Structures are given as structure tokens and as C-alpha cells.
Image 1 (cartoon, one colour):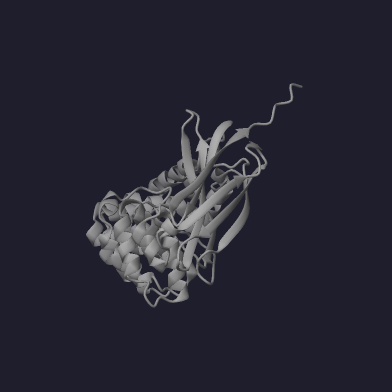
Image 2 (cartoon, helix red, strand yellow):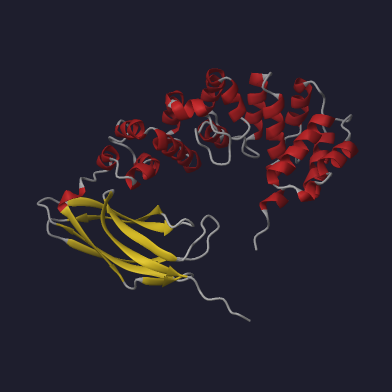
Length: 371
């Protein structure tokens, strides 16, 4: 079994935090901080542990945020000595987000300073929520920063629907204010940054599909190979849904001249094994076709309804009259993000975003040993 995520924040780490802060603040009460930050720690989950440590920081750092911020900044690592880094900085993020909003530029500057040592994407979001225009004016200046972590923070921290983080409802409703940031970072030399840009655009596409498809259409002409990969990754949700403009952006036409067949090796699958199937796609048109083949597994839920999940399969080019057969196995095994139920499921083939063939199959659960 993997180590529980909550154990990333433990008493040993709290002790290291205390030592590294005390090295830059002789008046810092290490003993009190340790007592407050570890009181009941083991019974808490990850974010609860972080909040406990945050509250201990509030109780032991100066009440004046300017003084507290100076201590925290001085406690970050340098080439000469270790400092606050890694998971120690999760509660520091929370401390800045809770205590720094009335010191706007100072709070954002401190988050910028810590992000090379641990992400600050969660910490900047309350600043954006408090005053979006003011926050984005500061964050926009980070796109030319020499540190890749700071540049990535400009895109990742402004994602409207960043997983595990507070949502930014104004940007969900109107993402236009962050498009200049994403445009500026689209050709960043670091793949780490470019992938963040792609993920942000994919977030936006869930609420504004036409906007993102048009944005990509405007930036794909004469694009480098790196930019083209970014734009395709940003379009993944739109391509899976068969959005016409998104498909056209990458040369995929309508599926009308394509015929497909689906054959299941068996209509029954034992949980823990795999669904074996074969797809055959034929171009019955008079012109060559670029073909994107995906498949969707419609999983049965507890109430008997079906919920689809799309999986990538293959992209091919078919000449007129040409066929292509593809064999696949889809594993039906335990994963942490889905609970499986026995009964009738369905697999559907998607050709250039359009469902073209489907079959039902029965998922069976192994019988339990009565002993």
C-alpha cells in the first residue's frame, strides 16, 4: 500500500520548519510552535494538518504581516543553507493567502519567491478572487521571469478550474483576461510551462468550447511542432466531443465518408481481466481522410445508468477505399478513481468525434471464497 498523502506533513517536518524559521528569527518561540502544530496532528487529514500548522504560524510569527513575511522570505533556501521547502510550504501558502490579502503586492511577491521551492498555485488564488484585475496585473509580469517555476505559476495559478483548488468563478464565466498570459507562454522553452498552458486552455474549453477552438485556429497556422503539440493537448476535450472547429483545426473532416465495424472477442468480461475488441475503419469516400479513432467505455453506475469515459486509440491516414483494422485490450481492473459494478456495460467507437459503432458487454465479478 502506498504511504497516505497526509503523512507528508508529520512531526519531523514540523520540527525542521521550526529550526529553519528560528535561524532567521531569534525571538521565534520554537517550542510553542511545535506544541501547537503537532497537537492532534496524527488524527488529521492532509489539508487539516496544513491548517493546523498554518494556525501555529499565526500564533508564533509577528502579528504584523510585513514582519512575518520578511521572516518567511529570509527562511527560504539559498545556495549556502537549507530553508523552508517542499511540503513545509503548503501551510505557508495558506498563511500568506489568509494573512496577506491586505498587503496585496507583498503577499504576491512572497508567493512568487517561494514557488521555486514548492508550488504557490493554491496561494495566489485568493488574491485573484479578492481583486482579479489587480492580481492579474502583477501576475502578467511573471511571464518573462527567468525562473520556469514563476512562469508556470502565471498559467497554472490562474486556471479557472484548477483541480483541488478554489474555483475562480469570474474566470470560469469570462476567461478573456488570462488569454494574454497563455499566449505569452505558449512558446515557452520549457515543456513544464507549455503543458500548464495546454491544461488551462482545456479547462476553459469545458465552459467556452467555441472560444478555445477559435483561439487555437488563430494560433495553429505555421505553428512549430512544440506549439502544435500544445494546441492539440489543449483541444483534447473538444476532440473527444467531436467539436467541428476543433476537429478541423487538426485536419479531421466529418465522419460521413468513414464506415466502421466493432467486434468483441467475448461479450463477457471478468473483473480484473480485459475487454478484447477489434475495430475496422474504411474510407468509402473519394479523397484521403485523416482519421482519429477513440473509444468510450460506458460504465454502469450504482443506479444502473451508464457513464461514458473516452480513451484515445489511434490516428491514421486512409486513402480512398482503404481499411485499417486495430486490435485493443481495455483493462477492467481496480483503480482509485472509479468503482465498478457488475452488469451490462457498453463500448462505443468514435471516429473523428462521432459515435460510429457500439456493442454491449457484461462485466462479471469474481465469486468470493466462502471460506
